[in-house]
Length: 148
Image 1 (cartoon, rainbow, N blue to C red):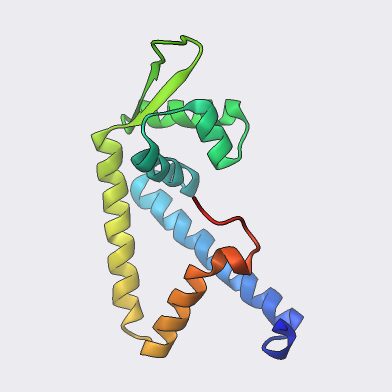
Image 2 (image 1 turned 45 degrees about the horizontal axis):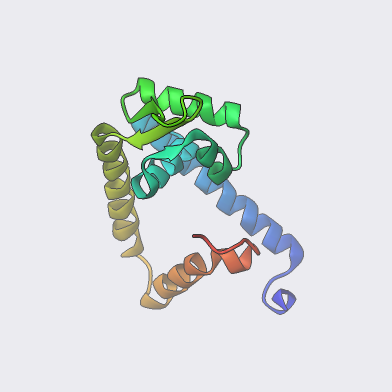
């Protein structure tokens, strides 16, 4: 079905262009705020599900538990989150978002909103609608399970 709109080589080039731009955007966020997308995603997850266990973080981010532990420790050192042993089970580490982490996350989100809003002003209403529709349907386009 997609073949009637775009050829395979053109789609490959378009996807590479898209990924390159997202990568460069991520690098600029890393330079400005010191956080990569995985760290930002963790902070956003904690904003919704704080406190949660390190094992839940590993599952959500689809990374091994030891990597989740390192990620949590790195953000805890930056005072963006707190980790405490669970009172009921000392083997379990509970992780909570701290105000500093929420503030950094809010600054990143605010900056992204303004950047996209200002640059979208150069697009037509139809182009903005197409962008928003594609973004809203990215799970279907990539055949990913619906986000919870």
